[in-house]
Length: 231
Image: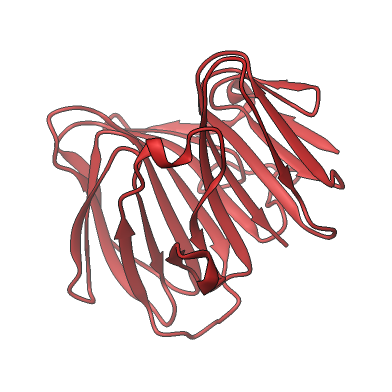
């Protein structure tokens, strides 16, 4: 099963400094048919204007992953962490027992990113934050694990039985991914048009995938992929 969610069908909001599109119900956007995909609860496609951002606000018991597509985001939190995450790189925040944080675009250009929330497997855990560079050249033609609940993956740690993966494909290239029984994937091409098991996705469309033992992705044009594999 592949449930396609075209970009133009997504919910959204325009706050001036923030233009957001929501793959799932979020804030003032509510669609009972789009509440979550397994443990994946939020996938927001955000455009943040230069010299603006999210002021300090709280979270608890959620795994929050930020995949920066263009520009950069600067993070600060109540744990004393501060860091800048640039295009192609990833930051994670395990909100745990509670944390306040801000996310600002301190650049002179618009920052675009995917903000992904996954339900935690460890409520009440100690909060944490981390970031890591992931050169796009390291994921050419294959999925690279960017964040994971499995420490053997060598990725950023999250408190969830889930993986966040990234890949790049040249036009005409294909890759495959085995989806274990009982798991679901949600795939979004950040850039480019692709074919997923015979179904076409354009840039920033979403695809909820389940009961497909093998996922085969073929790029119609140069593409950059982000995917979550979870229960």
